[in-house]
Length: 173
Ligand code: HEC
Ligand code: HEC
Ligand code: HEC
Ligand code: HEC
Ligand code: HEC
Image (cartoon, rainbow, N blue to C red; front, side, top):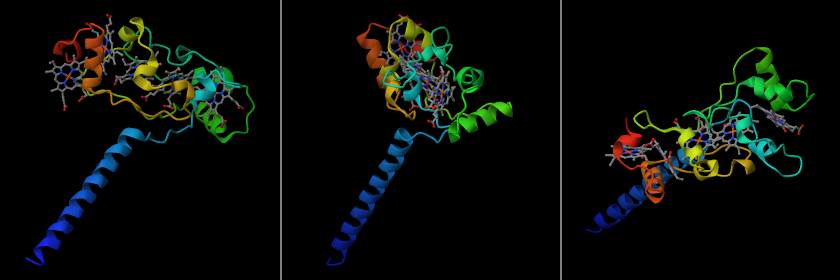
């Protein structure tokens, strides 16, 4: 018996340690954003503070009001400003090098729903749902992170609260 108790205790601590380690892995994938090829700051462009550009989201996410997908802007949108702007900043130099090579920037996707789920931006924007409800306040972030799980419970509870359809077919067809 003398040896069994410490063994059980040791096993218990191993389980706890694994659980915490596992939770950290989960937390990391949920919170951390993959590194982007160019460190694009949303706050400088979309924020309305001093020295910020106060651009509407639709200046870059061109199709968010008319289609399912918001889409990431083509480089030509960036070049409207960064083509002539002389800059010695390393991130702008990277941007201009992609442009000179005519190579699209390989942006890493952050938000997505599984293939079996139907989601449309257009319907939500038309219904007056603010981007921040699902993406957090993008005007103040330098780096995009996922701040909502975008899981079924999140979708369905808002649908229920707003008398939007909740039958399975709405989101799974
Ligand atoms: C000057 C152009 C520009 C403006 C203005 C802009 N964005 Fe973006 N946005 C980008 C680019 C480029 C990316 C891809 C790089 C990244 O994720 O950082 C992006 C990424 C995103 C993503 C993440 C996409 C994914 O991969 O899941 C969201 C969400 C987003 N923007 C929301 C917004 C919202 C909301 C606004 C307005 C408040 C806004 N953006 C304004 C250029 C812009
Ligand atoms: C309406 C004009 C405009 C557009 C369009 C625009 N930018 Fe900018 N961007 C700016 C201004 C102004 C700054 C601040 C420049 C400075 O501080 O020197 C800036 C800053 C940046 C910076 C930060 C540079 C640094 O290190 O401080 C990056 C990176 C950047 N832009 C990338 C992009 C990308 C990528 C796009 C296209 C998706 C884009 N910009 C579209 C005007 C614009
Ligand atoms: C009701 C929640 C909701 C709202 C409101 C919303 N989004 Fe999204 N967004 C999502 C979901 C869910 C995804 C992943 C969709 C997918 O996988 O097709 C996404 C993906 C994105 C993406 C990357 C994929 C794409 O569609 O190109 C961008 C960029 C984006 N959103 C920008 C915006 C902007 C800008 C607004 C406001 C004008 C906005 N979103 C409003 C839920 C929302
Ligand atoms: C903040 C509230 C809110 C959230 C969160 C939300 N929705 Fe919606 N959704 C609405 C509203 C309101 C409508 C009704 C729009 C209309 O009447 O056209 C709607 C409509 C829809 C429609 C169109 C329904 C139809 O019959 O055409 C689909 C599909 C949809 N949502 C899927 C989703 C998915 C998937 C998610 C989660 C990733 C989600 N929604 C999250 C509020 C929300
Ligand atoms: C408003 C949108 C919406 C409605 C309505 C909805 N779902 Fe979902 N469902 C989602 C989203 C988003 C996901 C993916 C994210 C997740 O796994 O939670 C999902 C995932 C699922 C999954 C996969 C779960 C997994 O672990 O991979 C099943 C099964 C499912 N839904 C069944 C249903 C059934 C049955 C109904 C009707 C009672 C329903 N859904 C109604 C949005 C919705």
